[in-house]
Length: 359
Ligand code: GZL
Ligand code: ZN
Image (cartoon, rainbow, N blue to C red; front, top):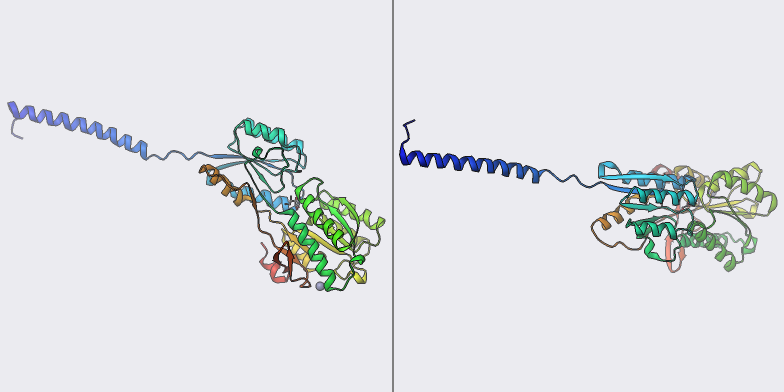
C-alpha cells in the first residue's frame, strides 16, 4: 500500500479513530441490543391453594383440575394445602401463604362462616383471594376478590322437581314418599342449597321427610348413617344423598340389609338420589339403577380460576360471582326434562354409550 503522507495520513488516522469508536459503539449497541433482546424472565405467578380436604371423588377431581391447570411450564407455582375438612387447618394455610407472600390465594372453604379475620389479614397483605366451590358468608364482600362454583340451591330444586315429576309419572301419591336426607358437611354451601331444595319440595308436595342427618360427604359415614336409618325408619323408600360418596355408602348398607334398591318404590324398592356425577363409577351406579337420579356438580374449576387470574393480571375486574354449567343424570327417561324457576333443563339418561364416552 503506497505510503501515506501529511494530510492524507491525518484523514486516514481520523477515519480509523472514527471506525474504532463506531466499532465500540456498535459493540456497545450490540451488547445493548442483546441485553434488550434477552427476554425478561416472565414473572412466575405463585398461587396458594387451601383445599378443604380429600373426602370425596368430587374433591379429588377438583384438586386435580387445579394441578393440571397451574403448571410450572405455564409459569405458575401452585402450593396446595389439604385442610382435612378442618377450618382451623385452612386458616393456618392462608396465614402461611401470607407469610410466603404468594401472588394469589385460592380458597375452597369447608363451611361458609368464620373467615372474616383471616381474609382481612390477606386483604391487609394486599393478596387477592379467589373463593372456589362453596361460598364464604362474610360481613364485607370486599374480603374476597371473586368466587366461582355451582348454584347449590338450583341443584336442590332440580332434584326436588325431578322427584315430583317422577311421582306424578309413576302415579305415586306424594304422601306415599318417605324420604331420608343424608346431608353433607353442615354449614357447607352445597349442604345448605341441596337441603333447602328438598325441604321446599317436601313442604310444597307433602312428602314425608322422615330424617335429616349428616354423612360428612364421605362413603364410610354415609354407610353408617344409612344402617342406623334402616333400623329407625323402616318405611323409608327414598334416600336423598347430598353427594355420590355418601350414596355409595348408603347403597352398601341397603344391599346388606336385604332390601331392594330401585325406582319401583310402590313395590317396596328403595330409590337412591344423589349429587355430583363426577366419575365413570357413578355412571355405572346410575346405569344399574342403584342411583336413579344424580344432579351433576362440576368440579373442574382450574380453567375458570386461571381465567380469573389472567383478568386480574391484566388489571381487569372479573365478575364477583361466576357459576359453572352442570348436567342432570337419571337411570331412565321417566322425567325427560325439568322446569325450575322458569328455565328448562334436559335430563341425560345414562346408557352404556354415556359410560363409554365418560372421561
Ligand atoms: C360441591 C362440593 C361438595 C361435593 C361433595 O360443589 O362442595 O363437596 O358435592 C364434596 O362431593 O365433598
Ligand atoms: Zn331400569
